[in-house]
Length: 362
Image (cartoon, rainbow, N blue to C red):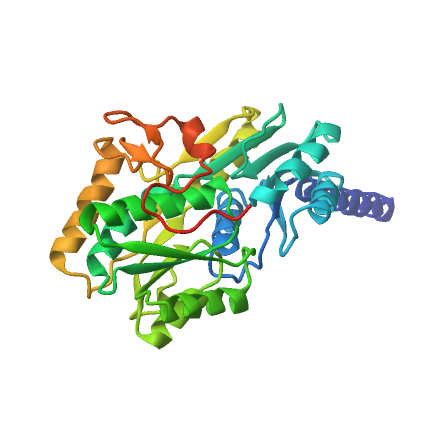
């Protein structure tokens, strides 16, 4: 009888232990799945790298509640729709699609996956389960414009552009307006590479610009190739999306850094809390979504002071990069004297400001 009771007790204990293991497995399986879609590799040391830092921040903040997945090097267009839909159909509750060209694919998938929340970077179209978010990169470029306007000797700033979308055009205009405000002789030359991440094309573009007289290289592309070219050629450069100092320790004047981590953590928390709703976010210096890397020690103290003053002025609202008067290349007034543009005008910017040579590709 004792033996029977012992066996019964032992069996019960084993069953209880098995149930605890099963329960633990179930809890692990119930972690909310969060997906990320990147246009470049996470090792680009630029745009996709910083978005992936945001993903890692989410994992660090909610390791017991969230499991993240990412897909890198996803082409904009039909391939993006396939990848986004695959994530949505495999239990991902929240999906971040991190490139402008993912906008329409995200909306198409969201329309049929209504129980999934989507966050699209740099877009302007929303729906009940699609939010949009971006950063005011142009604020960083305005500060940088003051620096490069003071630092250039040739008065030619080279700019490696990706695609002629408003985000990129705003950056070129903000750089030029700031540079011209401290150096009326400054010119800006743009080479378009029609790619977000192509180190070979980016390097060739930087070399072309230097051969055309540029002594400072800026970029709105994702690899550190332009910074590396500037380092080899003894020119200045500005890092893009992340701190690229390691690739050009002598060349990099500073870098415009996209800090996505706080936003990603907050939006993931909103889904977990049940408070998520569709909205548009456009953060800059004030929110910390845009920051600047350390200034190169070779920058004179008065130029650093000017940059810091401009930086603080943008934060407190006394400086706006596009405060009027602002004219386009034809001389048409786009922002009147004493006025500031609204976000709609900035979001749709499709013109070069007065003084920039060349035309925007169609």
